Amino acid sequence: MQFLSSMKTMIALLAISLASSPVGAVPAQQSTNDVFVPPVLTPTAGTIWKVGTQQTVTWDVSNPPVHITNAIGEILMSKGGVTIPNLTIASNFSILLGTINVQVPNLAAGNDYRVILFGDSGNTSPAFSIIQ
Image: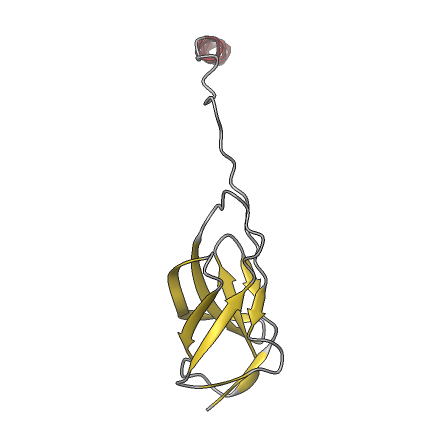
């Protein structure tokens, strides 16, 4: 019985709080943010980066939405489809730049590297090679 009494009290309090909530609390103009998914243009398949050199990562910014959810970019790398932990090769840049120079980190030679461009989402380049 005490349980039913407590349950009735909770339902009554919920009903009162819903009834007293302000109507029309929606802002007059609501802005919506869009996810921006710019494809990575370079590096391309067949590209070779040498460790220690400066290279350029580019992406297509020709059709950005008006309101971007996250306009701050970051570039990570993956090898064999796995993101390399603790390796950010560029960060804190405008995703609308479309290009950024990066220093090729000291990684083992391989032909299955990719850059991952983050802003709103993670867009990945085709696989490319890194040599020593």
